[in-house]
Each structure stands twice: as structure tokens, then as C-alpha cells.
Length: 277
Picture 1: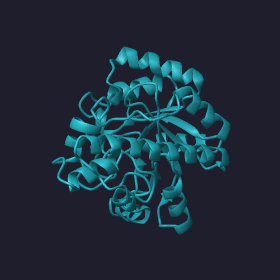
Picture 2: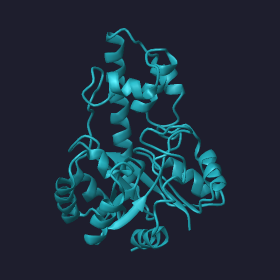
Picture 3: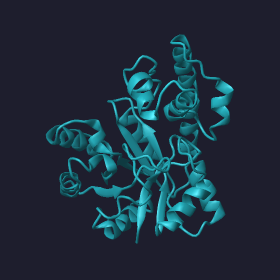
Picture 4: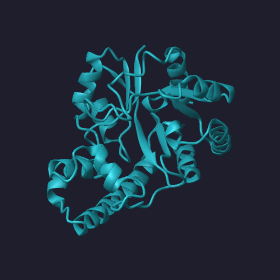
């Protein structure tokens, strides 16, 4: 068993098509992947239909409004009509947000053609698409600089948009029969005691797991998160958060967390049982 449960394709803000993503995963020896594109299940759908020679767990990632960096991963194999309707609404809101951010950039003397941006995206347009367009136009030297100076949280061209709250997202997951997992908890940038209090509160509302093995946990170490999740009886997951080859800032290469995730087989088995309960 070798799994990566957090991958992004060109159906949201990744650069590889779902098929190329699966091919790359196979080259790295993976046997199970979850395509967790933002607000869309299309990438998972395409891979399941094409039978690419690797097991695919359907998933998506939601950005939540409660605090900066708060994201929720949803995994499931059940029919998700209600979830798909909600995701379509969220994608439309992301499009509106992107337009407002482009207007702000234009006001700062950095116009970006909307059609050019749209043609470079196969899914909803998000901040990463804007950041890449800024680099291509010479407004920033890297996508990280684009975020740090212009479109990151609290920066001049930032727009918060409209997002679900954690309680709304957990309720949606419960009604759809999908499994909610807290994504990259160390990106919340709070101390261990504060994080524990948050997780306990969310667990009481239906949170099922914690993404322990994520690149953002490398500096602080994985052990504390692992102990927290297991002590609370929660699912333990992991993934590279892969978006594009060569990105090492908060993401890593496909399968990059496998060497740290020593109880992967039993943890993945527990997640797969949970999605079929």
C-alpha cells in the first residue's frame, strides 16, 4: 500500500490533467490516490471512468471562513447529488471573487485579461491561477511573491469571498455520507493546546479525521499531530498537496509523505472502511 490522499489536478488549480496526475502517481509507485480539487469532483470522476490502473478515492477540498488557512477535505464513494449542487454554488462564488481580485489588480496597474486567465483553467478560477498569470505578465517573480505582496490574505488585492463555515461543511458531509478530514492543521498557525481545543470542538460537530502527514508539518514534526489524532480516536490521513512539479513551498512531490507515514496501511484501511459505513 502506497497512498497520497491530497492531490490537485488542472480541474482546479493544479497544472496536470487528471490522467497525467495518475500517470505520475503510478511512476512513483502509488497504489491509491485521492484527487481533492477545490470545489469540484470532476477530476475524480474522470479517473474513475477511465480506469487508469490505480485506485482512486473521490475527494474534494473546501476553503472555510472561520479562520485563515482552514480547509476541509471530504472523501466518499456514495452518490453525492447534494454535495455536487453545493460545490457548483461554491465554484460560482469563486468566479465572482476572482473577478473582484482582477479589478483590484487592474486598479494597481496590473491588468490581467479575463479570457486569457479563463482559457488557462479547466475548472473554477482561483488565486493560484491569478498568481501564475501575474508571473507570466511580469508583475511578480514567482507565485509566492504574488501571494506575499498582492493576493495573499490581507494583501492589497485580496478578496475574502463567500465560504462555508466549518459547521456548515460538517453538516453537509454528514448529510451526504462523506468523511470530513481537517486539512494541513499546522497551516492554522496556532499552538498545540489551541489546536487541540479547536479539533475537539469540530469533532463534536462531526469532524472524523486529521491530515497529519502534510508538508506543512515537517518543521514542527508529525509526532504531535499523530498523537493528537489517535488519542481522540480520529482517522489519520496524509498527502503531498501536489499542485505542480517543482513546487516545494507548502507542497511536495506526489507520494512525498509516504516515507514519514509509518502506519499508512492501517490508517488508509480505516479511512476506506469509514467511507463505506
